[in-house]
Length: 271
Image (cartoon, rainbow, N blue to C red; front, side, top):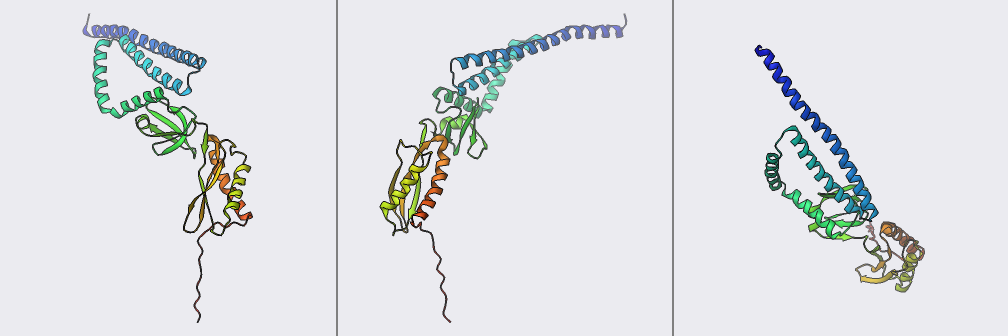
């Protein structure tokens, strides 16, 4: 038997040995991926039946998905012939190195866990945090996504979010709209309060309970300032804010009550 035929037979044997392993690994990957999808789908149904919070559902499913994929990768590598014990040691060492390099990411993961445990907000809540205001869209492993008031997507790292102040405008269900209007010193206080209160009680989205209030808040340099405080549901906040502002201007004009503004006086020289 010549050298060429020996080399050919060697390659055939290697192809047969590793080809079967690679084929087996591909089959395991396909079946494993299918099984993972089924498990996640079944888990989601079970959590929905038990009324798990939507935020918690997405967080846990995301976390389980990553865990299952890592296990599947280890099994596939073992099928190909990679020593899983050695791979586990390499993975542990790599994990330590990556962990040291990505301390911020680990902090964000820990922050996500804390958010799930203490639940300061849930999907659909209107919150203010890290200088941003928006409706919670998704709570992921490392970040939380908000939809801003101008329909822009805001992504906040969970580490910063869990360690900072969070204002949840949805928890109580209602919000107070804080408005201030100034009128001239010649205006009748009682009449002005009646006009402002009538604007509040006439607005369809202003709540009757808690009752709206109108009070003199300041005697400023050029105006008497009134603190106008209507209440509304969290969803109607901006409708009430803008609607009341516009209606107050129209009502004060109709009642002949002046809103002070700077006047320019032209002085002409007599020649």
